[in-house]
Image (cartoon, rainbow, N blue to C red; front, side, top):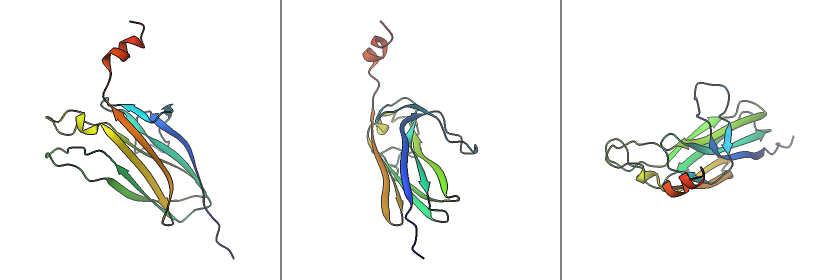
Length: 145
């Protein structure tokens, strides 16, 4: 019998509501965008739906621009894998803007972030995000001042 080919569809990307790792539901999309303002606790990433891949494993990696950790070291890209437990499976891959090192501020979060997901050795979903400093003038202009 021929092996079925998995079907992977990116269903949304951008800024999301806060993700709760203990909840069964995925975060909700707030804004479709690849431009993210570096405000602490902003959640961004993408969601995918994968069909016909029960029992497989996906690998994921988040490449960030050089975030400085609590001990002053530049953090390595974040990677991992997940087991696909159904034939119609939704997955969220994302991260949060964080202030990890007290003297670095949010500046180490600025720049290009790349998130990618692989299945059976092939990249099946990827998205680049540009994390930018807040433009205070634009912030107030958008509010009518």
